[in-house]
Length: 241
Length: 369
Image 1 (cartoon, each protein chain N blue to C red):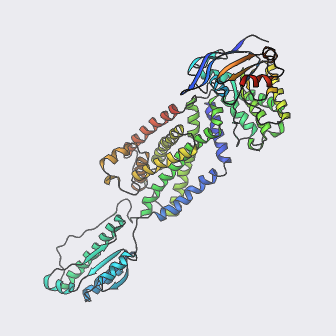
Image 2 (image 1 turned 135 degrees about the horizontal axis):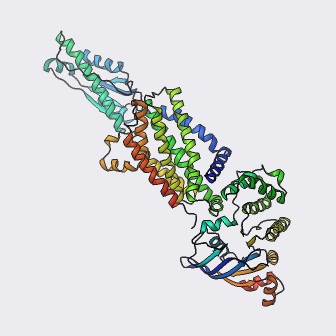
Image 3 (image 1 turned 30 degrees about the vertical axis):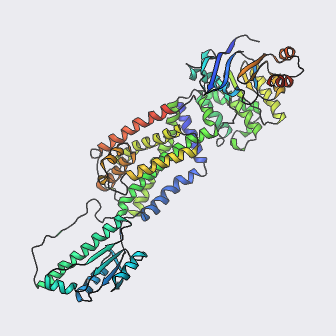
């Protein structure tokens, strides 16, 4: 694995009034790795992810993404990352191709480049014949895979995925992870949150958040040895309790 | 620039695919102009009048027939008991009572002077004042006829009033109302459509996806403004077309003046709608806010009432009321033929609002929370 640091977070705090959503987060993510960001509901995963993407400002701390400080050059960071939110957020009343064209345009991908990139992504999804379908007519599984592809349209360095597979059937989940692996193999860093512990096993490294703090961070196998458990599921339950 | 064009293209695709919004763009102006212009008339015809005639003289009969002959009045009943008249008044079957008391004719012949009594229903004070004025003019006409009749020769020495209604010679209230309703139409399209559109993106989450891109705040707001600006100009054209076709409204002035003004006006009102949408999180909130402002703007714009009659403090508030400017300009241009120089002061006003509100909307739009 390449040891180039693409995300560096130090002493990140986010407070909403008296509630501390992120309590002194410190971690690094390396180029090309699949970084699993785990935690129970309300542990502060989405809050942290939104800060990394420049959608929210931290109360204090330093956040460096793709070599830039998110606080001072948010738009420059945004040009280098892709983001897929927990809530599906492509335009339902536009077709697959129109959504891709829109985001390609926004990220400044030029026309010829987009035509090639768009075809490439559609081929990867096996959706070449479906390009003129409205998003609203697609099933959730297809929507999620497509949202991932649209997040990748401008060849970002890092892609943030917030529970991309929640509510998706096992087959589609597997296909989704194949897409993730392929992207990572091409050097894209994947920062993913999930509630499925089998998916956690697929990650290069995982962190587990409990009540706004990171309680564990290492490769899945090392974590299991350290905590003397047989599966990620047991580890998760042990830490959360 | 390319980013703005791409965002505008997206807005248009969405508008044309919206099965509720699209018909509304076409139907709203047609219905508003056909229904409201006819319904919101200020002309008064058929004022229901009950005459209490206790005199039974030739004079009183002449006066009754004079009222009967008037376009404005519809004599319901001639009775002799005032109390019965007041009953009719109370149950709403009459708007006005004219009381001709006993000995009116005799008084006139003996004392050269007599009087009648007029009672009007003042629940609607404008209507009451107007019907009172009409009744007085009927009676003063009657007086004049009477003088000639009684003195056998022309009384001469009399100042006659001759009225000419400039800019709307027939006092056609539709010529007055239609431009006003056109202004309201443009305001609804501008303010509501833009505001709802942006807040809808917040609600369904597509806004967050946009916020995580490097798109600039100004690019996003401008891309929201342009499509509805074009739709607004289209609505104005459609409205004028209907006005000409159905009501034959006069277009005395230069349409260039009107369109130039509407262009700036739409920027101001769209900017206002977008500004409201940056304050709201749900469509319900932005809807209520827009309604509140629309109502205030309309009532203070001078569409139904004369601006000149408003108290000074209200006139000061009108400085920030975009509708006030447009309401004046549309009537000045269409009915009076005012040119750029005549409406300059309104141009400055609306430009000021536009230059203030659009940057405010951009500034208040938050990509980062």
